[in-house]
Length: 307
Image: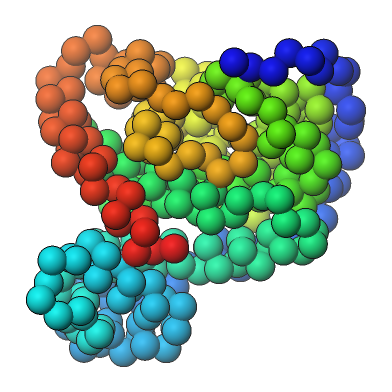
């Protein structure tokens, strides 16, 4: 049940102070160039596994995640995989590209999160939820008759909760207060954030990404991922993130900080995001449900190999 012992309080900070604190947060360099050399290679039709493996070897963190992931997902192999070329063969270029995007963001956010010197926030849970949402956002959008020729579909999911990382740096006391209470829905969490700070994590995250020159699609999707119907443009991205977020929570991969009641099966079909994507019962619904049913059971296993 939601906590009711603390009555709503008036907004604590002005917009000017909120923006100043956001501007004082460290910049994430990886947002501008997420392993560019590797991304170019995996997108090239002429690239070969040996070239990709050579770039991966230059990054110990990426190498470790790659081998952990392949041995976690393909745990039935008779021998564990210790060769990068073999790992590339088993995982495929799409998962290699996703790993290349997630690894530098996680590494930098991890360093970012330690700036405050505070320890109560379960960062690993946040990373798991962010990557899980990225994976499912991409699956959801792939089931639609639209073409996305870059990685926006993955990045909007990966970055949708970046506002919580910013809050840990800029508003740690308020975030701690939110973490100790129980909530029924993400909407209640956002309402409490507005009461304590003046903005919720989605708006704070969008302002942070906007300051660092991320694309309009990503900024708008992050800002409206809890209320995609209010997005002025790029509703599909915001809607897909909302549905993916709900699916990941249903799979037991929580948002990381706040305590929210479990999401029951098919609850995502009642969300605004689902209706934006598929209508009442559009022809893509069966495709979407098949993709979800295929990916969701494997999600915890995939994430265990990444973190």
